Amino acid sequence: MSFELFGISLWEYRIRRYSITAGPLFSDGVKTEDVFLNLLDYLWKILQKRETLFVLGVELDSSFGGFLQNNTNLQKKYQLIPSGQAYHRRLIVLPKNFDEYIQNLGYGTRKEVRRVLRRLEQDPEITISYRIFTTFEDISEFLPLAQQVSDKTYQHNLLGLGIRNDIETRRILTTAAENGWFQSYLLICNQEPVAFQHGYAYGGTYYAEQTGYDPAWGDKSVGTIIQIYRIRDLINRGITQLDFLYGDNERKRSLSTMYRVEQNFHLIPRKFPLGILAYALRGFNTLSQLGGDFIEKWGLKSKIRRFLRKWSVS
Image (cartoon, rainbow, N blue to C red; front, side):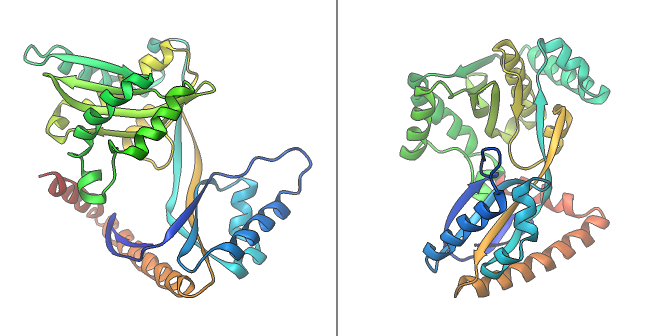
């Protein structure tokens, strides 16, 4: 349980968190509210004092989203605490050819994409190669190179996030490769990995799980370029949708063609000591949100965030 300011953890209370992704799937005619309540009542009974629930990617206008926000019986046993603000989950409905996709982008984005591609691809001092990884044999080559890039990013240095070449990650990717889901990308400039995209293809949709680029190559827009290369490859493979998954940012907004509104939530049992800490977290989040809104009003929040990101990779 993390008390964060501008994305930086100030204090953490170690817990075991069980995550629920989106909402359960139901057959026709099922009383969904009864199922939700029975499920969460059962979980409340078996959760230990340092165990809690986290609900990831809840569509706010779905039956599950409405239940979490409005059911009074649920609120007797859990505190529902938003994790961040509601966001737009961005998606791309991919057309049959790449030129059509480019033409569907906004004028400014279309112009920027063409400019950054031309600037990198026509630079005589830069050699470019682009790798696509899809098989079990590819995993041992992809992970070390992706981690080499990931370790240079602000997400790793500031938040401790990123892709890891470890036993657990290799196990997950092995399962994905065996089922034909594994599909990741790497951009190499002057024989050095500079950007990666990692994700899974399933049922006509590509799920973009992780991304990263070397900040030393940021002025060449390698993060944008690998996105475009990936979109072109997905169209060629007959993939019909790219799902950017959780969270939102300017690049996702400019490249996407549709969105839905989602939010993440903590579901914290009203048990000691988590119940007390939940009140403290709720109060802290309220104050930090008010402070963030105030400095955003004066145009300082984005400047502070950019400074912290640059500082973390310097």
